[in-house]
Length: 353
Image 1: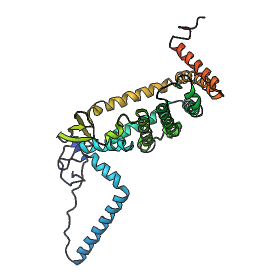
Image 2 (image 1 turned 180 degrees about the horizontal axis):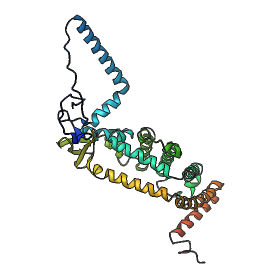
Image 3 (image 1 turned 135 degrees about the vertical axis):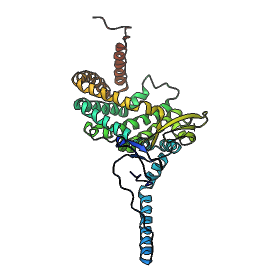
């Protein structure tokens, strides 16, 4: 057969048909197929009409490239960078520094992407819809309490006397924004998970989450510590050694000592060697866990409904609190219950019968 990219001839035995190999001429990963015809010989332009036709063809190609550059330029550039080991690691680092979570998906081999989406779809079909909806509703109520009772929370005995109360309030607001992004995403409806695409999710919600996490770090550190996400944008990567399938990089981040980083080429993407070693076993184990969860869905639903009932009762106390005193009393009740679960109730042990 002939390589569809460089048109170089590739020889192989009938037993190798269907295998994915690197072209010995251009290193493109291709699937071996039988009876691939040789490329048609290229004709040389001769005569006026041929020259005019060639010029027209060139103009069409140029126009097409310009259009593609405008519409697809960023993605084409990203794909080109992902094709080299140092370009891949730097593209991911710079993407994360710019709150682009979709770069993680772009850096993954197609087989990995398919595995992730399939796993999410299996999970969506294994979860009890009522348990999922009740969980989302419970978290929405919790978010409502955190938003509406903020004054009570920060005037309560646990927070009122904190020396860094202002910094805590900033991080609190960032955490609320992060919860809001997640609860309003596609994950809020189980039906959406059945046709879920992780790439789309990372491009949209994932990028918003990155932005909120970065803001949360800035609020907590109050500028005293460099933001690790922003520091990723300063990463350096140098190829130490490389062959067709593997490479070793020397990674530099901020003031940290240089690190050796091994990567492996899979489906035209360079992934960390450690990730490659455990990926498919990890997906298999996750699928087994999902299958087991589906078999035990009835028992799991019963247990979760008990937990939900208790949590909803606690939330109701906070929702109904109209004063600082009522809110503090509700908080003390929850802490006493939590202490009891830990075997250290308010009296120092479990209540006696």
